[in-house]
Image 1 (cartoon, rainbow, N blue to C red):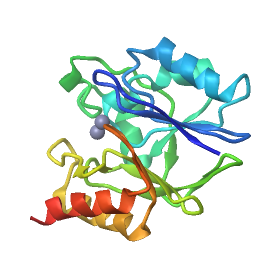
Image 2: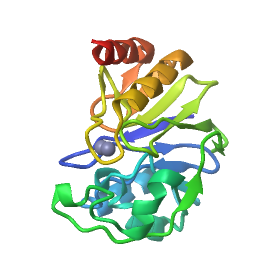
Image 3: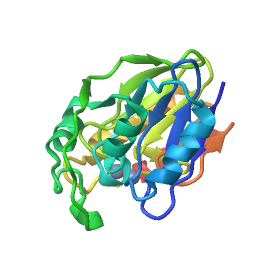
Length: 212
Ligand SMILES: [Zn+2]
Ligand SMILES: [Zn+2]
């Protein structure tokens, strides 16, 4: 039972591998370090299949590498339906690839609506729709182990920006509040360090910032 964190370097987001008979990968980074990411995934999951690549949201620093990872792992890509659109279309504007000085190639993406459960064997991860950083942002929550993977909705002691396309401060505040209410133990955010053991305190700090 484990969540393996591949800490993002450069513009890359953190990439997570959730173990089990049917492991999943959460987010893909920009793709700039594809070979290294693939090697690290291989070290964790071995030769077995990866069930899915789940994208927390539409931004290029999370989705740019999804096409190459999907192909290499033979795993389908999932995203919330609101954020799947620009990823599928390869929209440089919709994915903010432009902001990173990059182009985005469209890829096949399966829609999530929220409340789906990815079962890896070790972990049951429920999809929570947490908009605000983008319209189709999701978080994944393993209630049994108190594990929250939050994308760019909330970080250890901070929140994601809400000024990009489809971002919304009111929605972000409601989303962070709903994550706080879960009372998670461990937080694995899209950027920066994870918070092991004190996730709820870290999210409470983030919430205070939003309420100021
Ligand atoms: Zn990000
Ligand atoms: Zn983002």
